Length: 287
Image 1 (cartoon, rainbow, N blue to C red):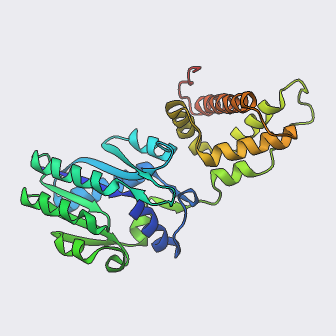
Image 2 (image 1 turned 30 degrees about the vertical axis):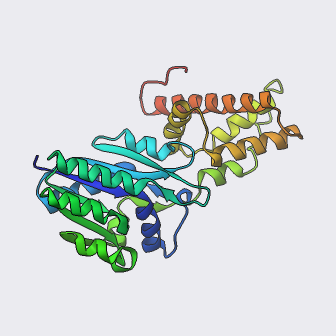
Image 3 (image 1 turned 90 degrees about the horizontal axis):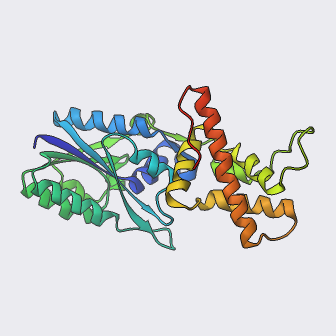
């Protein structure tokens, strides 16, 4: 098939991308990825360099708690397939290389692609490149400046064509966060207006106040993530429970933890419906 596939190692992209853009390796929560812009840039690059139509973009990442809101947002985009390995207790990404290699070889063997674009620097991927080439696939390798300092020399030598992305490329879809969600949620809860009713449960107040601090652009993905995974990211759950404990003046029992978590999800739903009405979108049905 005359198509080009794209394989993105998200760990490499974030680590090297933040260093190129900001001079240091930032944590994921310290960066904003414009999902649609990233997909559009990758698609345009792949189709321009190969002169072929895109098959799809494969996005590989590690996780320790299931898909993140960012993973879910990416997975919902057209032409994107999410593949997740895992992150161990030392923060090391595991299983991602094998996923990339398997997909490269499978697509090449099934003649699903004629060329591919690989954004990574790991030497372990060399075997996938070699096998894909044996099936006639041309491999375009993208590195992030300085490519020869961030990529395996053996991987560079194996690729058919190499490119080096700089800040001017990455800046199209990666930005530094002014505030992370966890930082916003860890602040003291916003006081209730003086005219508010005392009948409102204190845990519901905490849930509502913290839900209102989630940036507008992240409300939908966070809400969908909690619904689908039945869990909350640690950077969300920890401030929620800590604020509740501060308000009550004691540790929460299991029933109270469950209550404030449900109240937080409900508050997100209410806020999402309010945002939908502002943009004339259909409201979210009660879950």
